[in-house]
Amino acid sequence: MIPKIILSRGDRATRRLIGYLYGPGSANEHTDPHMVASWNGFAPDPGRSPHRNPKDVEDQLVAQLDQAVRMLGDKAPETTVWHCPVRAAPEDPILTDAQWADIARRIVAAAGIAPESDEEACRWVAVRHADDHIHIAATLVRQDGRRPRRDHDIRAVQREARKIEIDLGLRRLKSGDGTAAKRPTSKEHFKAKRQGRDTTTREILRACVRRAVAAASNEREVFALLEASGVKVRPKVGQSGDVLGYSVALPGDINKGGEPVWFSGSTLAGDLSLPKIRQHLADVGPPSVPMRPADPWHQATAATERIPDHFTRGDDHTAQGQLVVLGEALDLLPLTAPAKARKELERAAAVFERATRSRTTADLDSARVLRRSVQTILRTPATTGDGAGLAMLLDAAVIAVAFASHWHRTHQHAQQEAAAEQTLIHLRNANEHVAAPVLKDLAHRTPGPETQRRYARHLQQAVPELVDRILQDPAWDALATALADAETAGHNPATLLGQALGQRTLDDARNLTRTLTWRIHHLGQRHTGSPRAQAPTARSTTRRPGIPSHPSAAATLAATPQQPKVRRR
Image (tube, rainbow, N blue to C red; front, side, top):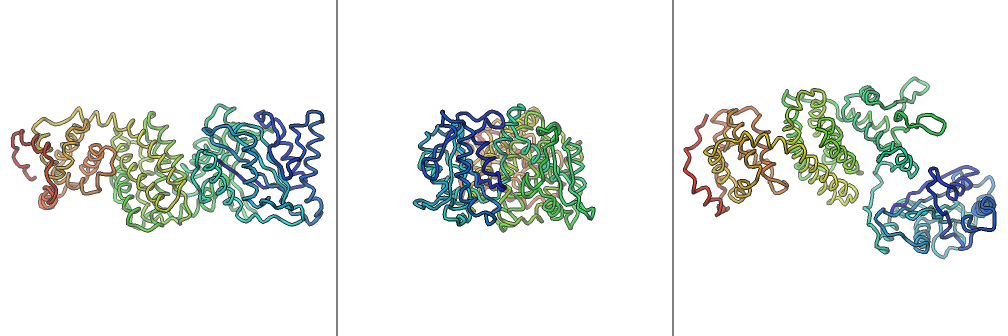
């Protein structure tokens, strides 16, 4: 259940709101508008007065609601109307008028508008004009002439909504911390539906601006990228000539007067105002030590693989910085993906946006490499290759997002945790589309039986408890090819396995063979060390003391001919 508080000012604020509530709606979406509750239980109801002119009843209702405000004259507050739509979830049962009336009374009591048994409280009404929601309208002067005490009414109303969900058995939403971006209004949703879109203009523009900020190195690039993507940009210029802010609009999105519908950056999200964008770009500027030239996919993957350590060993500010830049990477990855995976990656980025926001200040210093690497990928399309780089990066991103979800859980960030969990679904779906053809190609080049048996023995020595699972996995052929490619490049396969297994536990991998394949692929393209440098690591891949060999794996390997030791190169 979602309550949303809106404040209005002006002499005709009450008139405008009541006229809207009992009118047809902006898209004729209001059906059977009628009152379900009021401050005294018998306020005039324009929707249930068949023998009177509805406009006359509206006039009477507005006059009664405004009575306390009018009595104050010039001393009346500027903001006079408190408006709170309360919407049920789509999967919730249709509630009765009596249930909505009880919900309305609980909401106004929690907000301080009309505390229980307070006969001098503010006047209010609850109007229902659809199955799934009501609108509560109140005037912000009590009947005794005082102002209502509604300190922190937004939080109080949200808390009460969570209790209502439990009491009525409704879908239980996650508690927020006030850091979420502004939701699209009902009017925006109806407009998008009329235009045949699932996504509102506000959400599309938010994604466009986030993507431009993620890809840009400076403010000028942000606006250039937005214009290149077709978004209209209107800077706000002060008297000094300095740019103070900006607004954006989608081509073809116009109001009744035929003018573009503009959204300022701050109304899209708090961190998309121009001052916040400038601060962010300054914080993620070039690293103090320039990045060494390397394959950007491998640099991005390595940076993403380090994210779990930042969550588990770093402070909260560093963890928040990793969230922000991981979100930026997800914003940009759809631009590098094949069509089948693009939609899922766009959904992942849109959902994860909520997981990037908390009240913790972000320290972005340790996240610069990931940001720069993904930007380099975009600016050098030739690096996209056969999809192996994207598959490798997505596999690391899945683990990073899983750790992000755990970090939010430990900090009791319920909405952010839920967003991260939903992101995992989309990322895994995308990775299936990306990884399948790459794994198929690797499997077609799998080495011969003798080489595979040699690699199997390395696995037996390194991870006897997992070797059966790996060898029986359909992805084993791809892993064997990755090992063969690395060996051809000069790597010792036993050493490489030790390094891949030592990076992180495989317990958090959904498919450990695939994850091991991408790790080997990643490590195999690094510069090879000298034989002397590789030898100590190779010795570390022998069976760890205290862990017995897997019986069935040992029997399988014992049946194969003994292979000569790998010759050190």
